[in-house]
Image 1: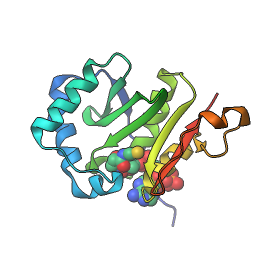
Image 2: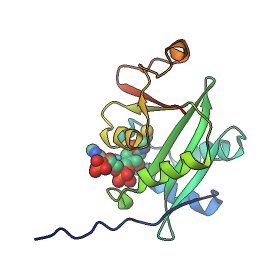
Image 3: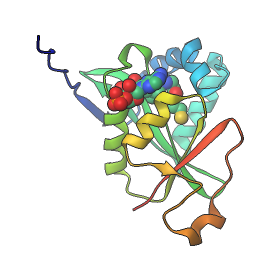
Image 4: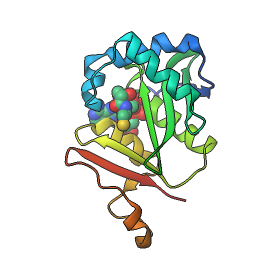
Length: 165
Ligand SMILES: CC(C)(COP(=O)(O)OP(=O)(O)OC[C@H]1O[C@@H](n2cnc3c(N)ncnc32)[C@H](O)[C@@H]1OP(=O)(O)O)[C@@H](O)C(=O)NCCC(=O)NCCS
């Protein structure tokens, strides 16, 4: 019997608006998602302070991920000790449909700065897979060895990946 075709969701990115924040807040409260990141969920006040800072920082690029017209998460890049990091968070009800991969790939098209780094909890297999599908490789073996001195070491429980070119 043939398998049904997998439906590819329509994933778009747009500017973050204040009305997106309650959805982002709920997503970061989810215990399974927080455990993937190795992160302690923020209460509303701490969450709002954090996002107010993100949205005001000209060095941070942040987009809302929209799937079939609904707010599905966010993807961002920010400066961290002189290097440009990428991060994303997809709401649980959108998991397992290729949303993170499509959203990150689109973000990488819109923001061509390289190299880009990602620091991920070593147990976060989903996030590591998303990054690899988008072309990230182990940062311990950068393609250009002369850059190696510039590469931060990940902690033992983290994996650090990079995207060049
Ligand atoms: C990790 C996360 C972004 C994945 O989102 P998603 O939309 O479900 O990912 P995709 O559907 O694009 O999956 C891409 C690949 O990862 C795999 N994958 C996704 N979640 C996985 C998991 N928990 N364990 C193992 N593999 C997983 C998928 O099977 C798929 O692989 P394939 O193409 O080989 O079949 C999402 O679960 C999330 O936002 N989690 C909480 C926050 C977080 O971890 N952010 C990243 C911080 S660095």
